[in-house]
Amino acid sequence: MRRWSRALAAGLFLLAGSSSAHAEEPFITVASTTSTEESGLFGYLLPAFKQATGIEVRVVAVGTGQALKIGERGDCDVVFVHDRPAELEFVAKGFGVDRHEVMYNDFVLVGPGADPAGVHGKGIVAAFRKIAETKAPFVARGDDSGTSKAELRLWKEAGIDPKASGGGWYRDTGSGMGPTLNTASAMDGYALTDRGTWLSFKNKQDLKILVEGDRRLFNQYGVMLVNPAKHPEVKQALGRKFIDWLVSTAGQQAIADYKINGEQLFFPDAESRHSGA
Amino acid sequence: MPDLVNALLAAWQLVLSGDPTLVGIVSLSLSISLTAVVFATAFGLPLGAALAVLRFPGRNAAVVLVNALMGLPPVVAGLFVYLLLSRSGPLGGLSLLFTPTAMVIAQTVLVTPIVAGVARQALEDLWRDYGELYVLDGVGRVRTVGSLLWLGRFSVVTAVLAGVGRAAAEVGAILIVGGNIAGVTRTMTTAITLETSRGDLALALGLGMVLLALVLAINATAQLIRNTARSAAAI
Image (cartoon, rainbow over all chains, first blue to last red; front, side, top):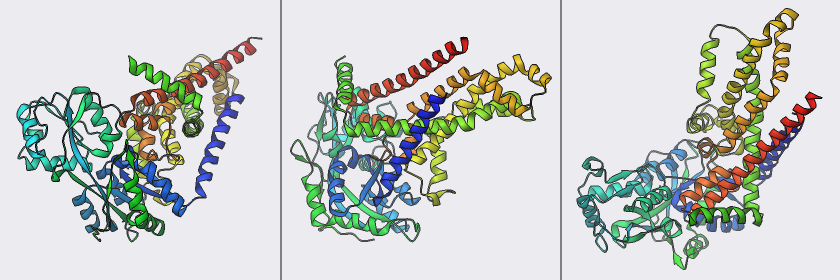
């Protein structure tokens, strides 16, 4: 028992050591989406920001809906997500301030190479109609994320209510982008994904991009500070520095420089499309 | 099959490379889980012993509650601690959310009922066999509990090991309260979750194998201590 307790004491010591080592550096907490984390963008961007400012950025990567919720409760300093209507509502309700558009990428429709619904090269709305007509399996996020909301808007535009249509072809997984793609590749289903996650995703199996380039697939990312008037603990000076850096020439260049296999994932567009709170 | 082979290779390469990120993740995992088990043992053993020895109104209900909480889903424990520690929650002022400390708290909530439940069962059996002797000798309740814990020390180790297993394996609670922040709150299990969602299944399973090896090592050590102690006791 004594040896046990010594080992456990060592564990305690380790923990105390690791938390105090971090306490010395200034840091902010950013709630963001799985797409920015899983695509590897943050792994590339944040070290550059830290080098420029000395500020460590701690990212909690969840769906857009959950990220906004974390901001609403005051549990982070900055929110960096991609669902414009929800972001504007977040700001309008006074939960966020200082919103800026930062960059965009696009969604793509992926599906099995054999393309049983015959959607290849079609517009996205026509493609969605085809999938519903042929009842080909479609794997959906269903988790209130930005991607999920964009997908639901597209179904609406196609005049289809996939959840009500029956037949079991619409599979609502309630999970992140990666798990959704894992499911799609396992069951030869179609799925809507952001291009960044798709490019860095490693378990593609037979999945291919079938529809891309439709203007409806445009995916804008916005960043905002959690309102310090609602939550005084928010590190507003540090958070503003992060936001300012993202929209600065240096930050925008860093975003443009991030590539996977020579392909650019995110396209900076801060200066051209400012949108204040 | 090739996937499984790749996973083995990935695990092997991970261990061989001595990658500092991996070392950080492993030591964070161990320190969080072991610290939580220390606290859970400190709360759970007395609780289990009290339930085994003391007779009080509502005892049956308390036993049922502890047994039920042994099966508490980690996500629920995580959500509960999240709402407590959130800046909008009752303990928000402590700024503990998304820190290792929050993860220790969540795992302590998860593991305490397991230690208490397993210990209670073991000690209750001993109490049934020897309880009258203690009463006849006029030994006080507190000393009785201490003595029973010593008598049942091997079962107590089992209770603690069950707690270690639970803490090392769970991901639901620490993912919610820790946020899986790289270099700060990323542990073995949350890293496995992340790599799975990135579709890097070989790396995810490789990490899982490293985790399994660690848990095996902890259990083997405990078994060794137990055997040594047993043969020492026999002499």
